[in-house]
Image 1 (spheres, rainbow, N blue to C red):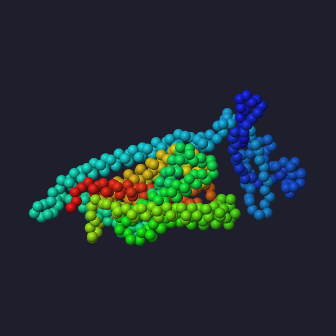
Image 2 (cartoon, helix red, strand yellow):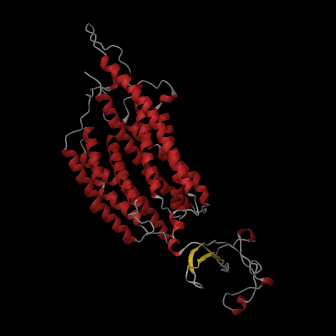
Image 3 (cartoon, rainbow, N blue to C red):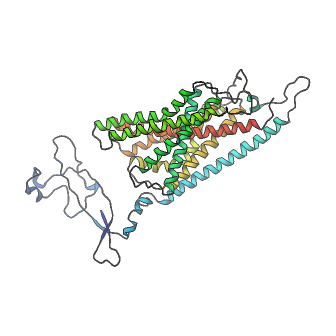
Amino acid sequence: ILDFHEPEGMEGSFRVVGFSVEPLSIAHSFHGGFQWDGESSEGYTKLLQTCAVGQHMTKAAVQKNQIVEEGEKILFTYDVIWRESDVEWASRWDIYLNEGNLVPAQVHWYSITNSIFVVLFLSLLVISILVRNLKRDIAGYNAIELDEEGDEEVDETGWKLVHADVFRPPSNMPMIYCVFIGSGLQLAISTLGAICLAAIGFINPSRRGSMLNWLLIFYMLCGVIAGYTSSRLYKAFRGRAWQVCTFATATLFPGTCFSVFLFFNTVLAFFRSSGSVPFLDILIVAAMWCCVSIPLVFIGAYFGYKKEAMNFPTVTSTIARAIPKPSNILMNPTFGITMAGLVPFGAAYVELFFIMTSLWMDQYYYVFGFTLVVYIILLVTSSEITALLVYYQLVSENHRWWWLALLTSGSVSFYIFGYSVVWFQTLEPSKLLFTYILYFGYMFLLSFTVFLVTGSVGALTSLWFVKKMFGSIKVD
């Protein structure tokens, strides 16, 4: 279908301002069983019995789909419909800029409104629970006086009991924890920068690869932040192998992505797919990683280790305190981690649908202003729900909150991957095994990225929150 417009003052002149194509698979055949060799002129004069003359072909009128295999003869046909349009030449790209032909703008506004209401509700919940309870707890703890005769604390319960263990380094994989936090903060800041530039129009997505190029540039430059953050945490945990921690921060996430991408690209090149990336481009990306990103991570780590260790408001005891069993299923950390991801996922799932459509269905995506708002809402909701769960775990005398905070705020990635499994059916994928491997491999990388981004922001927010909590009470 070709849309044309007649400009004012230019009678008799027309401009094509839009087009749409509908592909159909039709096993064509001639009247009378005529077989055409594709070269003789007689084939151009014979009528097809699978297509009506002077009538637009529709999907419902297809009698039989064409089978594509070796030895099959395929006839290619087309028809054209000219349609007059009111769209002017200067506005011909608006159909892609506002997606009005695909999704009404109200849908995005409904998504944003839904997300804002989720944030407001969660913020009010956090304020009403945390602020009120904390004020009562802090006032009660500071009012406690030591028993002069027995030197025993009176009525001391709740989260103050774990003051000597709350800042104890994680007992499981503290280095990996620091690497995850550093890599996640690097991804969070670089993603925020790229989305902001796209939202204000500095990055034009119509230029092929511009968004990805800027994202890579921001990611490399933010390597300083990753090295600095991971080194500061690792030094606070009294780690010794700082070289290994820094190298893991520089290579774990980008190395995983690069390895998966290289495998997929090799297979695509083997299938002679147009989606494979030239080998020279891969070398350029590898050179940028080795010569720019990794050195910047080590520079950031150098400054991080040069600074004094992070100060905590309480002193950690030599022997760890025993953790009591959860009183009910609601206080079980596994249950909290599993359910916490529902809140941020519910705030962002509508916009996630449009992003998935853009990634896998070749649709244009230009509404980066909505993306920026949803991205901020995702980080805020993840941080708030994490602070809430960490507080209740400390109240139940569970001082192992480091990994809990990371997994709680990062659990939204589990729901995103689960959503991608359900959404995969809308693609009507082929039955090739590599199609499934390609899709779920890239969705795993996307979900892992979301896990690091939300997990690091939620964990750092919880660290600030816990330091404020225990810094406001009097501890001997």
